[in-house]
Image (cartoon, rainbow, N blue to C red; front, side, top):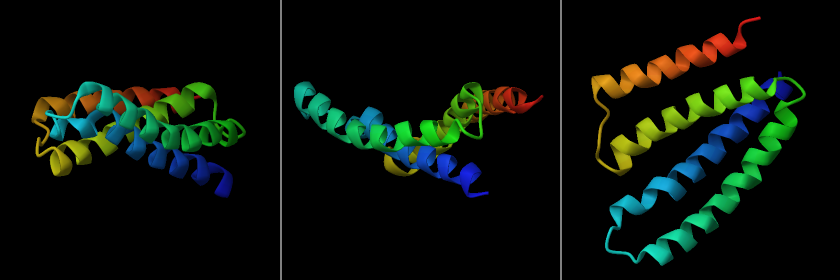
Length: 112
């Protein structure tokens, strides 16, 4: 059970860092772009510190396509919360529908 859950937890944590690295600066549009890039790189370092072990450990239980599919669904879940609560931009029905289609695609990846 631990072998199955730890990669998911690490992927979730890495997605929190990466979402802040990619989109957190949108609240600070007056900050110079070079500063935003450097801060984003710094945040992305911590994302890699979680993502690489998640994939390494997860590969003992999941295939690479399964890991990628999980990562995409987790990214969308983290982003949905981030967009709503941090950026103040709640998702609309069509966003949820598109994200749902990606979730269906991930489900397909897990079929034998």
